Image (cartoon, rainbow, N blue to C red; front, side):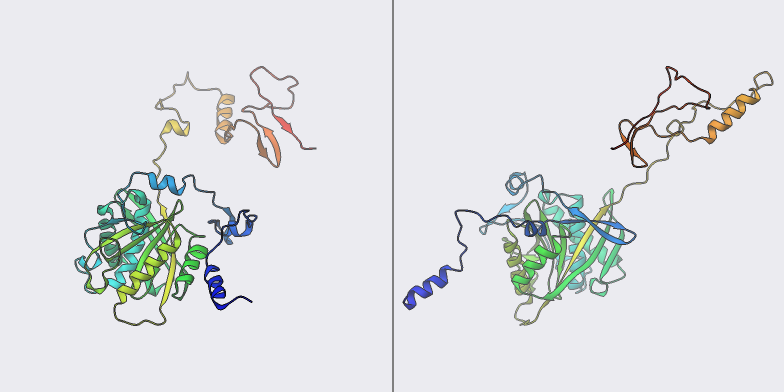
Length: 362
């Protein structure tokens, strides 16, 4: 029999994952389950069309890109602003209601400026944009499950923002980690985490995780609590667990001495779409019309009746678009020409005429 000491020692060591010499076979269903799913919006709703391809940039390559992040002792990185939401003019104690809108604008600004290029000025810009969005909105975040913002202008670029409720439950670190990994980041690369006392924006890009916190934080990105000192910041993490720990820590410090035994959180995904500018009207030459102006035709210059009828018929006909190479036409592989025989009495092809070559599967 083993003694008590050996039993306790074995129990303690069993908590750590042992690296096997031979890796187990890949679980395909689990691997695909961690990939972002792609959906196509149709008349019947969203239809699953496949999985997102692997990113072209690895984590190490992303970390080597030029950036404004400062390395922190816990292996995270930080870009710190100069103020926080409490410093916004005219917020009138509505900071807890403004916070979700600041987080929403952080996801939109991430489309305007790549996260790896953020600077203290961009962190400040998010605060100002979030307050403007809150004042312009007819609803608070907690009053609707879907918030559709038709148009938001960031400089010369316009965006459409859709915020959709995904999940809510009691807050625990393991539950939050699963919710982000299996619910949010399977559907989007960005979203917002909201509680009555704390809100933040979260991102996943190229195997890195980002947290935007608009409250007051110290020089290493930790919350200053209800003192409302410090500055907003964008923090970058190498793993999801570190992101979850920072969210829970900052939320706990934000609550201060209040003991919140059953705290709920809400996760919403944010879809940001760039609005294309209106296409300019095509000029006459692009429409296939003549650039020359019409002139009056004299009696001697009048066209023959047959030529006039031919011109009318030609105007009624629509010219088919010439596509090069094999194309499927009515489920048959076809190479289509640009001209065709007129009439049925033609028995021989001319040198300037093109025929069709059709392949029929056996």
